[in-house]
Image (tube, rainbow, N blue to C red; front, side):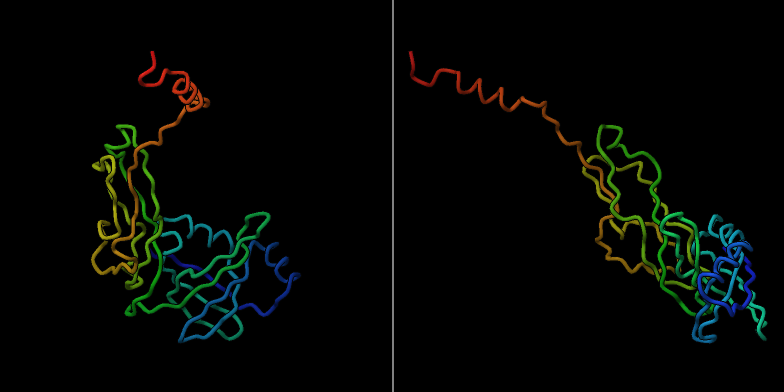
Length: 211
């Protein structure tokens, strides 16, 4: 997925400057890459949130247009890091990485499991240990999500990284034997006092050979 975003070079810094940006509905950000170095910018918060809420999420390929302070350029970038306010949970800063459409990059994509396993219908419990997959591919080939149908899993079955359906052109960097999910039998719960009662009955029963 691709999206467009406008960015303006910023010259201010400090808490007061960030407050003024927030009042304008903007947040500070940094664009970096081998060809451009580091460029501090400001972007509209709502526009960035719309990208994050889209189909591609954090892995959306962005056409970033940078203007101001003598700059007038457009670059392909990916969201590299997001910073949130620890109290309010609001997005307050973003890092964008310049990418080349002809050079592979490393990123992560979510793993989603679809369907209700046979083993779960029989009383088992689905445990998903891996929720993100580390991959290497061209920016335009980044999948939105890696999805696997697990409706055929029975009690005791396990899904490994090697079992995941990965699109062509995408290389998985995780260990192929790493466990993604498994269907386990439910733990047997004992009624409180059950073991004590069993022990008392054993002690009260007559021993072998007694009349």
